Image 1 (tube, rainbow, N blue to C red):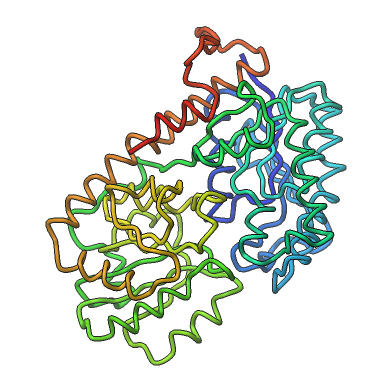
Image 2 (cartoon, rainbow, N blue to C red):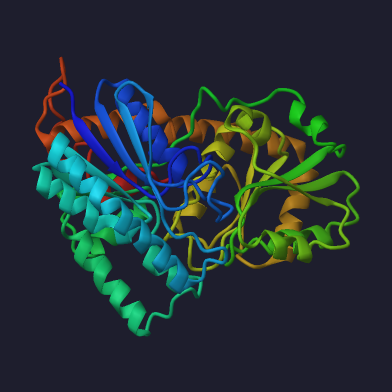
Length: 439
């Protein structure tokens, strides 16, 4: 039977990276499964932190990209330089402009469930209120812990008045939802620490489109088009933001300037791009490119000899970078900076190398070892593809989500029994997910 689903999230197509990819993919997958989906989102702005051309500054835009899917883009404040306070205003402005649309949708269409993607957590009360007003269930999905990440990156001070208020708001809102999900075992464990009962916790991993991203057996056509002539490419593609630890890439490039066979290729946009280019001055082995279209994703990730995934210390259990899924799916090894025992370290184990955050010398040495050992690269890349197939298959992940949606709303899936409530059923609980996800 059809589920009427309302999705609230600040990032959505036509944005092509990060949270937008998964919120869009989830909406479209539910339509594919016969459900009725309405989306309330912001005007596209990410990762450039600039409103995309064609979207009005002060008014809404409604689209119907396909039957069964209705999307409303809301105006909001987009800071050119997103500091901690400006980010709060940015998210709050979206919550404010999304409020009338979400409530009207709840009254008029009576959604069976309201799914809120965080960020932006500030908008979560809007989704919760819409669910209660429409008589449906409320589901909150945590892509990253915004409050703790803001503390870890220095955007907010934990002992400040704003910091204490943010922490209190997070605890309060998490306990209001009927279902709370996140993307990794350590992030699920944090929900338990916040007092969320195990039966309300669900693992909803990000995923790779394994039909779109396939390992290349020869050189990527994109490499020649972009004028990259070196045999090896160390590749980073994604958001380029402050406090991500990306400065380690030009630092490593300087240490490997003697390698005439290597190009560091950085694809992306964001508020840290100008500074990253400044840190790369005088280096001939590093090049910058814009984000590539989604239909060239396989060629992009297949261009890498090694994927680079920097992260700052203290953030690896607060966010699990969404770009990791397609890195693994490409069948190339991943070189990440993370502390042992973190979610990121666990996902990369056996598929690449882990080095300490901020340690450019160790990163450069690990990269050289991989470049000089093709047999090890091939083995790690093959393991990465297997890992993607095992843990990041979008079809299986979205089937589990759809089953849980039916279970939560009490709307039976046509021709199928409801998900099991027996102990150990593969639905909820961080302890089970931790065990299942161990390398």
